[in-house]
Image (cartoon, rainbow, N blue to C red; front, side):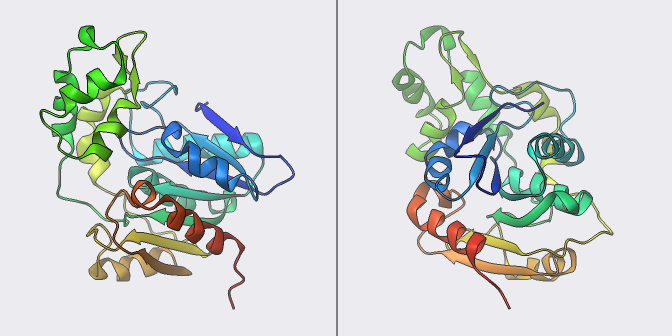
Length: 254
């Protein structure tokens, strides 16, 4: 089963948080702790990430089955929040096991294929000389040779196992399955529960042209944007992101 960190009391409704590519549940610790006053929050590490088991397979249907196992073990249904690749895994879960999902929040991703490639980040991580890493600042200095964004530098170093000189990422499997990660499966099913597509206002991941397919698959979908944020909206504006999640999870819709 996936590694997970649980925040909050069992008498609160459950919320499952699903991170994106190269991430882990650890990236969501602050938001998870803050939301734990109203939800019991389960922050998971997806397969091939963090402290979860590694696998040769990394399809969205596989990730959805992993999430279903967690929800079934702890009590269904759950509210589910997924960002980027985790948003695609969450959408796949909702479309294949809708009885397990109460409300769905999809953060800055759409159920479509994307043309960009993330393998350059795998090359950057492989180029880090792990024998020279004594603290995260050492890794940050090496990553800065290829990555200018401090948010991305910090994000990647959170997946470092400094004590054992390794990345907590199955880079080989992620590189091999990158085409599948960038795609989205074809579905004839739909999800009718409330769904929020929450995007960064400066991001182009969820475009107006994506709305027809979103509405076809997620009949009861709402849309919102957080101003002055991009794809990493939860890191760039964590309090606004948290407020949007709180409002959606508690709001009564006509």
